[in-house]
Amino acid sequence: EADLLQWTIDNILLIITLSNLLSISVLTLISKPIRSLLSREVLLKQVSFKEYLLPVMSAFSLSIFFTLITSGIEIENSVQISQSAAYFSQIRPWLGNVMMIVALLISAPITEEFLCRGVIITLLRQNWSSKTAILISALLFGGMHIMSGGLILAVLASFMGGLFGFIFVKTKSLLPAIAAHSAANLSDFILPVISQMNKATYVIITIAFVIIFVMCIVPLCKDIKASAYEE
Image (cartoon, rainbow, N blue to C red; front, side, top):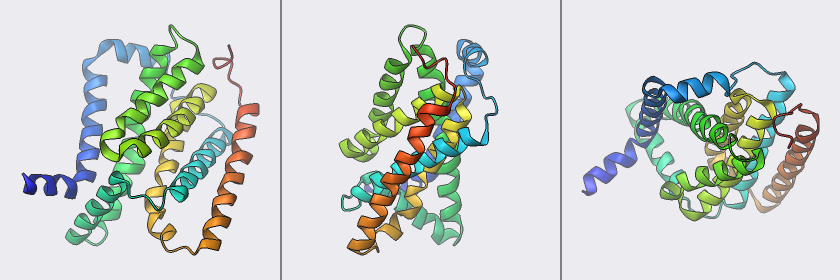
């Protein structure tokens, strides 16, 4: 049992990638209703550079802020990712970073946005308001992270899920939400740097990312056309 647990932790990045690919494949290949739903409602349309920039910067700054304020707390998910990256780096020096990129910046954002925003929000909006759909999706997204990171990660993921849902509904496209999700996950790559900061640098950078988030979220709320979001 102990050996199985250690094997799981060592290969968690590979497990994340394969489970994400399996989930999205099963849903799109087997479920006709979901394929039909996505073709009608989830628009993978191209959007303007600004509609990418503001969501990406908002998500990145909020994620870094959360990472900074929880840097003294050991979150199991982050520890397991670091251990798995170290395991793959022992096989090849570059493999750990490659596995993190594939799992955290590609497969997880695509799959989780497809499910939590593309499918769940679209389904919920058929009977409830956009705000309610975003809230429920965010709570479900947070709940998905309880097993891997406990209550703290679940709460933080719920906030991030709310932002991703807002971006999806605002832009009427999954692409900016996926890009924002990838940007948010970059915080896992920055954890080692944060642990080496002195107190003054820590405070300055925390305040700076709060300001960046506000500067991005305000125009995002005002400027992006989103008739579907408006009640």
